[in-house]
Length: 251
Image 1 (cartoon, rainbow, N blue to C red):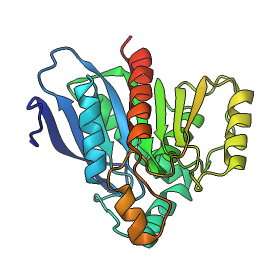
Image 2: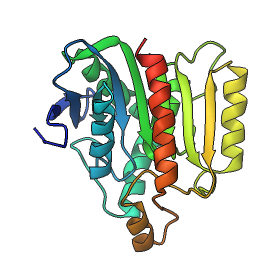
Image 3: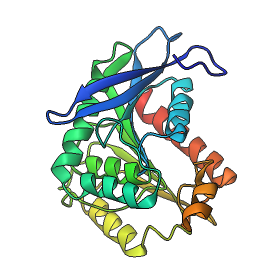
């Protein structure tokens, strides 16, 4: 157990399999809660499962969700430099079936947790994880609500058919994020509009990539990348996500 300001928040390692690889994630929940809770699958940044992701999971657990921090790389692999992070993330994104298999294994594991109501499950992702959850929503995954923070918009699933997307979608991105191109927004909107998806995109002025991660500014300087923490965008986007998930998962 990892104690925090709220001693009722528990964080437990969980090992599961996608049929081929061993995945090592974490289940984070408030053990004071008596009723079954909605569940959220959380997908990490390209670095893998970091301190930032653990903190984000605790934040959602305090709001009344059971969170499964998914391991998309297997064996909880992490990267401490962009070259390795890029290799790990592309190993998942270049093959949509690998991405889907690993995400679905995490979703199934979350649905089995004693504290979870399996009929109310959503997903949230950060950077690389944002691309994963958006692609899963596009592919018709059984999710009620999906949010991406500073989400990469690398689309690796086919354009959805009308009515195929079950999830409501919220994209919370930096308006000045050079990693996300205008044509990627255009392609996403075109597909979502044609499929009659319930989606919303909010762009935060001045914010670049990784704006919710307090360690982003240091990483940006270290690797000369446009990464920067933005306290205002972080606070505003978290408030939007809290409202969004409450409306769709806490019915």
